Image (tube, rainbow, N blue to C red; front, side, top):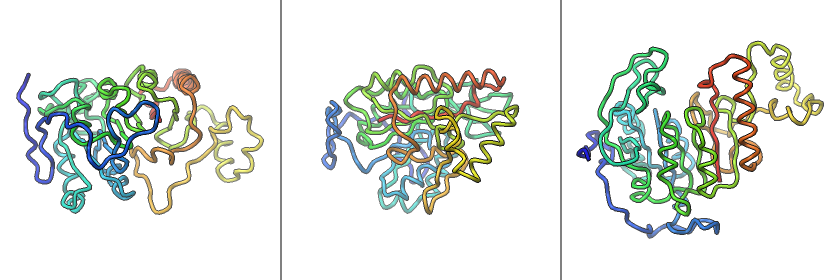
Length: 308
């Protein structure tokens, strides 16, 4: 095993692995679905793939303690510089680490053109011929991070191709109340969430924060009808039930505007009703088929799944 490195940025917690500490003193038990082997910290969110800190800032604004995990050293330093008061006061911990199957140091491919594309996967980190370079980043398994900081109320996962690694590190009974992950670069994620004990799901379009399907350039009539519904919502009453949600729009939270690329609302504030696994799987398969029929690359099928 490679030697685990320490984080060098002021205000960012070191990445040294720690033993599993057991039950935190200030926690409360999770719901009665068997998730009681550990205790859940109701005021804690773990932000995996924090990027520039937009999501972290939103969670802090809502009064949560946040463990902000970002593998890119430059972005981790920027997050620490963006929220120095939260770090000093205690609500924020910034970890400049990656999440992997085991502790060690791995090459992280920093995309020089679009930082959001950076990844431990070389192909994703340099997609479309974009420039990237490798840096060694200390990594830890997700269960070790949770063991140190506690089971969060909400776990956001957005780490460009490594979402499944995170889910495989979780154990049924030790999971957060709410969890979201990106579906673009992973297969079997919804099934894995179901195996972990999650039974309620939402499919969220990350461009609209609804479960709306995309409108492609060749769908001129559909685009016109959607725009009409946006200006005259009453028109939606005449849209068939199977398409009605495609014309819904997300109502922004008062006092907060989500920046492009943000994960958006979480937990019960996400758009729409919770649905069963099979319904979500069918809907996502249908969306992917629409992309293929329109000859649009599936990597542009940018949806998160939220689970509870």
